[in-house]
Amino acid sequence: MSEVGFVLPAEAFTRSVPVRFSHCDAAGIVYFPHYFDMFNGLIEDWYTQELKHDYAELIMGGRIGFPFVHIECDFKIPSRMGEVIELTLLVERIGRSSLGIAIVAHRDGLERLRAHMVTAMMSLESRKPVPLPQPLREAIESYQRRTAGA
Amino acid sequence: MSEVGFVLPAEAFTRSVPVRFSHCDAAGIVYFPHYFDMFNGLIEDWYTQELKHDYAELIMGGRIGFPFVHIECDFKIPSRMGEVIELTLLVERIGRSSLGIAIVAHRDGLERLRAHMVTAMMSLESRKPVPLPQPLREAIESYQRRTAGA
Amino acid sequence: MSEVGFVLPAEAFTRSVPVRFSHCDAAGIVYFPHYFDMFNGLIEDWYTQELKHDYAELIMGGRIGFPFVHIECDFKIPSRMGEVIELTLLVERIGRSSLGIAIVAHRDGLERLRAHMVTAMMSLESRKPVPLPQPLREAIESYQRRTAGA
Amino acid sequence: MSEVGFVLPAEAFTRSVPVRFSHCDAAGIVYFPHYFDMFNGLIEDWYTQELKHDYAELIMGGRIGFPFVHIECDFKIPSRMGEVIELTLLVERIGRSSLGIAIVAHRDGLERLRAHMVTAMMSLESRKPVPLPQPLREAIESYQRRTAGA
Image 1 (tube, rainbow over the protein chains, first blue to last red):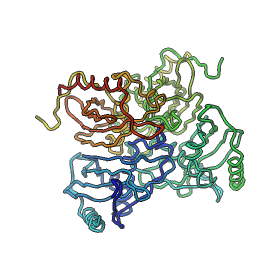
Image 2: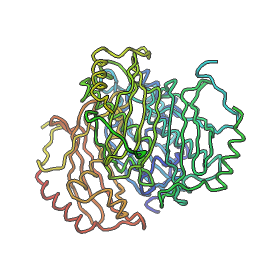
Image 3: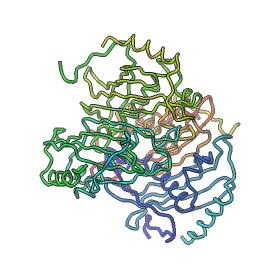
Image 4: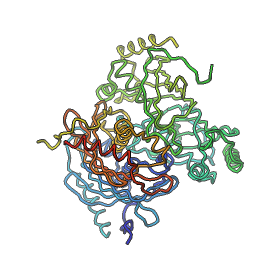
């Protein structure tokens, strides 16, 4: 199997992202920091649309933040202006206040990049980690079970 | 009629844009340069989806660029994280190599901002203005006629 | 006088900005929204370094924001990766809670672009305009007088 | 020794970066993709100012690109609007066409984050890896020797 081959569970949360003019550098390929911004957008949509916890409300209303504590990413195939890539989110680890996720970017069955990211839930008031609220934790655990096949 | 009331032609090209975490500043509202990036995204989609001229192909294949020569924008109502705003594109003037467009951002029937932008088609090789190709000109003229009602 | 010729007062607040890889598009010239981000950076430095009012402290401590209500910009000469451009700030109008400024980007005595921007000081709590605090107003008026020669 | 304590060689290439309004999110701390953009800016300056190989000329003239193949980053202390942080670049590994570097962000002797990044030199025409040109390789090796103390 090719180094960029992969299998993703059918139920995994996936969104299409068009590679825009503004994502691309002088070589016409995505300038890498934009990938991380795409990842954050995927995570927002995952909270709101899949977990049914409104991301903006968590931050602005709940005064909770989700800073990243660790990120790693392997870039395998560059993406060019005008392409549409798929981003899929998988849960790797659920801690007390932290969450480990993987994000896979792919197109036509080939993996283009894969990131592993650990985020910690934090109070915006105290600047301290706070435990994941129980309903959110349960929604994440349920998602992890539904997508554990891969 | 309210200063933010407006009428847009039904056929005008409109796309929804979610206001993301990454668009917002420390006050939780859109940091204004991001609006201009949203506008460029709308223009890309308008070329590709409405005019049927693939934007990425024009640039990477046709070696044509669309630099802006003039921009003005009135910001009327700020937009907050988690909102979805609508962006509508109208054609104001078609020149030999230039194009004047308006972009209106709105939500729930209220205008949030309105921009007027003039772009000039340019060869990426010669760095000189080039006339709009006839098929593209005709597509823009047709769009302008279809959306002239407002 | 050339259309891009200009005279700037010697005392006007000016900062150099390197045109970076990340500012540039597939044509190797600055993608225009990045100019607006450069402008905001210049304004921050002007508050902190020239007016001696710390910009971050005004926002995070004073809970004041500076949203733009109107922007216009003429783009005259594109800027390329690796160039260093100069940005100069001039005060055009001081209102009760609003401020009109011009920003000129130039290099080697040629004007590359010129923007006119109106900002309104706003309370981040009430979301209402607030009058410019007297010490800040005086600092801006003094700057306007010192740079009125052009 | 504290988990954020560290020793950097005195000769290591270091640049100050102000944390700007536009870097910060709704919590007033740096939105993480902006760090990667800061890193790319540091690398540009390192090529041009320390290695004496003009980064823009390598890309636009030499038609060479520097895509990243692997990135990892540990975020230790968040940075807030108005702070100035120091970024230091260290060379970790020099391959035939690849380069492994570390970037440390710090302030007041405390490490705020540390990234490890591997880049591969690529021809923008063939889209294939190309060996590091000998003068560039020698400049990097010389830098690595001068900064090997830490």
